[in-house]
Image 1: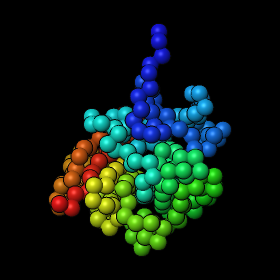
Image 2 (image 1 turned 135 degrees about the vertical axis):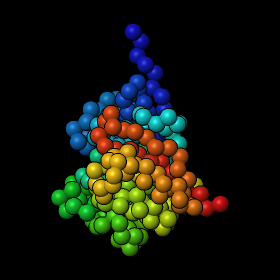
Image 3 (image 1 turned 45 degrees about the horizontal axis):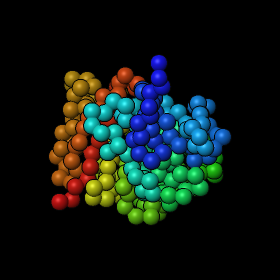
Image 4 (image 1 turned 90 degrees about the vertical axis):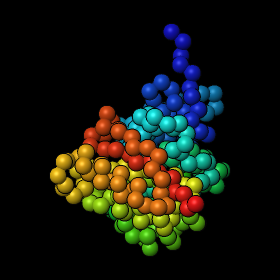
Length: 237
C-alpha cells in the first residue's frame, strides 16, 4: 500500500491521515517526548491531539482547518499555556527556527510550576514570551504584546470562561483576527441541563457580542471529554 501523501495545512503544519506534524523549530529536540521524523532536510514533530485541544480541533473541524491557524509572523496570545506543549507547536509555525518569521507567541500561565517548564522552553525558542500571571487580567498581558493580536487561544479551567474570553478578545484581538475558546463544561458554574446547557449558554453569550462572529463549535470529546472549541472571528464592521 502506498504511503498517504501529506496535506499541507499551512507553512510548517501538515496532516498525514489522522495525524498532525509541525516543522520543528529546534532540530533534534522533542518537547514532551513526542515522535520526530525527517523528510529530506526538514524535521517534523508529531502534534498529539490527545494532548492538544488545538490539534484536536484541526482534526475535527468541518471547515477548512487552515482558516483556524495564524499565519507565520503573526502575533499570538495563548491563555493557559501550562508547560507549553501546544505553545511549542504554534511557535514552530508562527516563528520558525531562530524566529526567522519574526512572530510573537505570548504565553500566559498562572501556575509557577508550569511556568518553570515554559520559561525553559522559551530559552531555545526566540519569539516565545512566557508570562506568569492571571490570564483574566488584561493589564498583566498588555506590556508583553507588540500590538493587537492576530490569534488567541484560551484554555483556562475557571468559571465564566466565556466572559473572560470575550473580554480579552475585545481588548486585544484585531479586526479579522481568529480566536479559539477551549471550553470545559465541568469548570463552568452549575446550571440546569448539565453540559449541553453550559455549551448553549456560551454560544448565546458569544452571539450577543456585536464585535464577535461565531464561526463554528467543534466537539472534541473524542480526544478530550466535556470539551467544545468555539471558533470566532472579530468583525468591527
